[in-house]
Length: 432
Image (cartoon, rainbow, N blue to C red; front, side, top):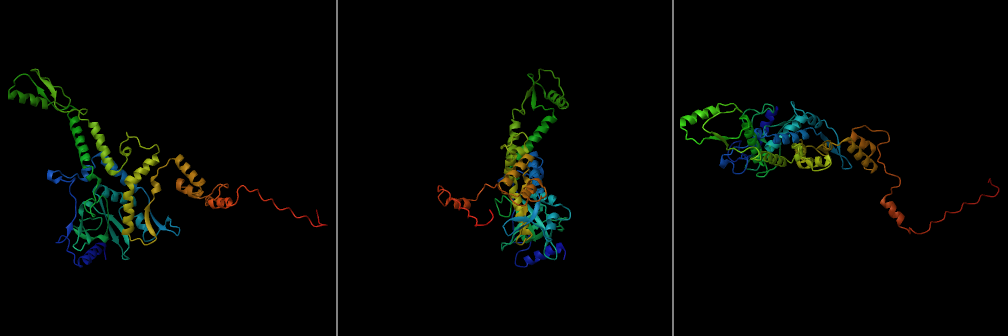
C-alpha cells in the first residue's frame, strides 16, 4: 500500500467511527486571521510573513534562530543503568535522523521546521510509514495550507492542501492527528493554534517598513522635504499651472529660477524633526524582544550586557532557542513512538562557543576538581581522542572524605599519641 493510500485508509477508518466528513457539519475549524485584535474592523490587512521578512530586524531574528538550531547536532540517546543519557544508534531511527526525507538534509529539515514555527506559530510535519508501521520519512507542510479541525467527539484532524513533495493530491485532504507532528507555541486563543511573534510586533514591524518606504521616497526626490512656493502677488490659474508643470519637470536636485519674489517654504518634517533614528532603534528593540533575541545580536552598535560572551550565549539559548529545541525533541519522540530507553536530544554543548583560553580553563577546573577524567575533558572541550591512563578522575592525595575526618575526630584530638610497642629482643645464640 502506497503512502497516499495509507493516509486515505487511516482517514476513512477514523471517519467511519461517526465523525462528520471533512468540510461537513459538526466540524469546528480553528484559525487566527488578524494581525492584532480589532484589525479587521479597521480594514487593516494582516502582516504576512513575506512582507514582514522585508524588515531587516525580522529577517535577522528569524534566520538567526533557525540557523543556530539547524546547525546543532540532533542525537539519538538511550538511558543507561546510571540514569545518564548517552548517544546510541538504532537501525529503525538513526537513518531518519540523518536523512529525514528524499530532498532535505537534517539541517535543512530543522531549519524549515523552525522557520514555519517562527513565521506562522505552527509547524506541521507529516509522517510516512513503511510496511512495518515505522516512520521512514518526515515532511514539513506549508503552514498556510493546513487547518486544524475538531470533530464532534473531540477527535482532532487536519485539513491539508496539496503538496507534491509530500505526495498529497490536489484539493484538501483530511489527516488524523496521529499522522502529523504539530509543534506550536503561544497558544493564546486555542490549544491547537499557535501565534507567531509577528503577532506581537506587528505595529513595530509595519512602522519600520513604512519608515523605510518613506525614506526611499524622500531620497528619490533629492532628499528635499515637501514644500510649496509662495509669492506676494496674486497669480492667475494659468500662471500657477505653468509654474507647477515647470517645477515638476525638474530632475531630482535640480535648481529652479522664478521671478515674482517666489519663496520656497518647507511643509514636511526633516529626518531630524521626525526623530527617524530614534524611532528606528525603538522598532529594532521591540522586534528583537518579541523574538527573544539579545539586542546586540541584531544591532552591532549595542554592547552585550555581560562581560563574558558565554553569559550572553546562555541568555540567548534559554530565552530564544530552548523552547523551539525542546518542542522538536518532544515532537520527534512522540511522533516516532520511541520505545524506552530511547530519546532524542540536541547537543546543547555545541551552542557554547568558547575561545581557546576559556575552554582550557574549563577543562583544567573540571579535571582538578575530580569532576571529569582527563579523557572526558579532552573529548568535550577539544574534540581529542583518549590517551593511556586518562580514563580515571584524579584528586590530590591530601584530600580526605568527610567520613574519614569524622572517624578521626570521634576520639580525643588532644590525647597524647600512643607509644609504639618495643621491638622483641633477639633469641639467645642467634645472629645479631
